[in-house]
Image 1 (cartoon, one colour):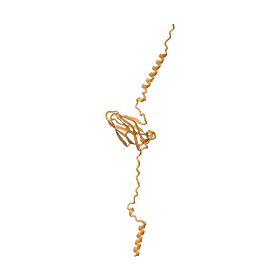
Image 2: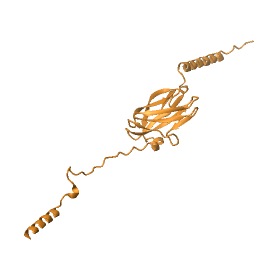
Image 3: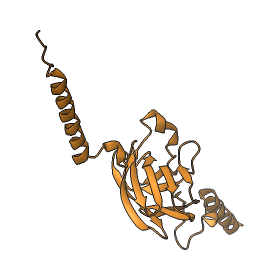
Image 4: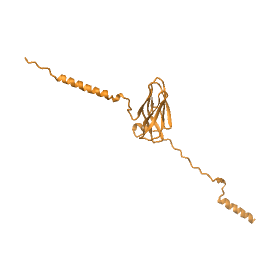
Length: 198
């Protein structure tokens, strides 16, 4: 009576599966999964300062050396409230963030924070975040304009420039209201001549 030998195929398949699993595990061990690392998921940048996390920070402006609307969000992961100072060259604003809360900046429902930007759209400028417990950190933030539809209604209006008005001034020592006219001169000469004849 002939006996059939057990097939080696299941053993080979099992060994291959174990090898593939080991290779894939090794890849994730040497190369951390990207989604496990904090990163900026939009146009703005991210910053961490002690218990404060800032997300999606960017400025929206019409031009250089003008007002720029700050966009983003500030989250306080600590047990105490934080006062966050946000500043660019020459301007600063303060925002209070309660413990465990997130304060949104800009957009249609966030806090209005308008700072000056020394550079125009398409460039990058420094934004400094300061808290008492966490100190300060400066991050480069992009400056955008209203080209993208989501930012079209968020561009702050540039402040109108006031030009000095020119005023007419008389020469020193003269009074325009008392200057004689041709008629007065002629009349005066006529009166003097008439008096001489009389």
